[in-house]
Image (tube, rainbow, N blue to C red; front, top):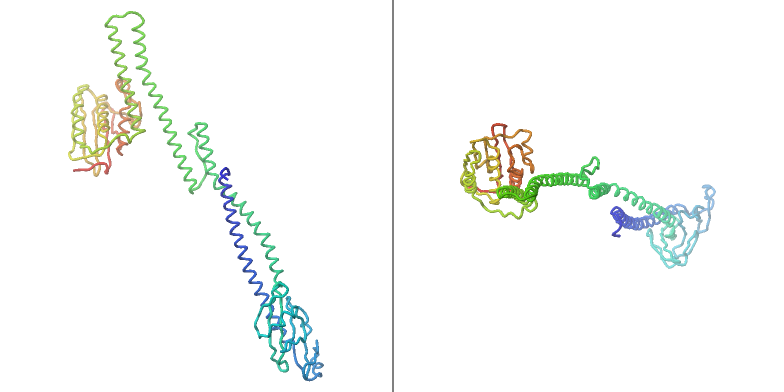
Length: 473
């Protein structure tokens, strides 16, 4: 049972349930029809006997038969004669009718169970039952009240088996059509289930194709529809799109990381080979070691940045959050960063008091440091950097502005990519992970980052954090 396809299991359960319902319905139909047939038999009995009441007449003078000219059967009774229509002799719908005197003396007609009915006294206009020969019979008596017929009774008798022909027809039709109905329902249920589950089959095949062929560009196509399975397919397609993007990003990240590491490794190997080719002076050895040290530090920074980036992406829960006085954090970080004064650039800041933010102090410091260092790197000689923290509505805004070289509009969406560097002529000390890290840290704190820039006039990086993650004293 466990190895059967789902559509087969559903069809089997559906068929079993339908068969149970049909069997129950057949049983109900049988009982109802049995009651109906019995009622029909009883009604026929009553109707036949009532009709025969008019078929018996009494005449005092035999000459009256000639005048009426409708003599069927003549019998002497008391001081006159009984005329009985010859139709009286026929069974009507299996009903037998007999004429009796009040002392149970049989006068005329037919009674299939004379012995069993002899012990049952007459009861006018009432249907009674009696068992005879293993069968059930219905008896209906009718007292004759016309003039001259006093003391006479009509007794109608009919067997319950009279309705067997009707029952047999019903059973035959039921046994023919009900199983056929079950088979048709099972077949229809199987086809309907197969059609309903075909989207799941398509989803399974697509997932299998992606797993075996590494084809993340493949999508599930089900056509038009808004049911749950189409929604599931859309969810899977969305998941495949995100997976494809994630894999492409990771592939690009690996490629870029390899490229970034290749240069310092090549320099280190070249310096080592140069120093070992032949004896060198102490000055040459020192210069080679300084080059190796510089490239090693560059590799160390790059590796640490990549590890921090991966840690932030994969294990964000490892960064503990606390309540932070944002004005104090900005002032502390900017005080230290102001001593850099690279390219003669001056750093100023302004922080609104009373903003307490729930976040990770180390990450937020890293975010601000990366933005300020980026401003130093791309700022103009003797320029200015301005850091501003303020409330905006129910949220908080942190911005870093400079009057440096600016960023071209077509590059503004690219600068947050990992290893992307806008000005290659001035990026020797960076690895292109600073702004990508800023964006990830902002996302970690449910915030967002955007850039406003114009080439030759400077740039402004704006971070917005929504309400709910901080409080204002």
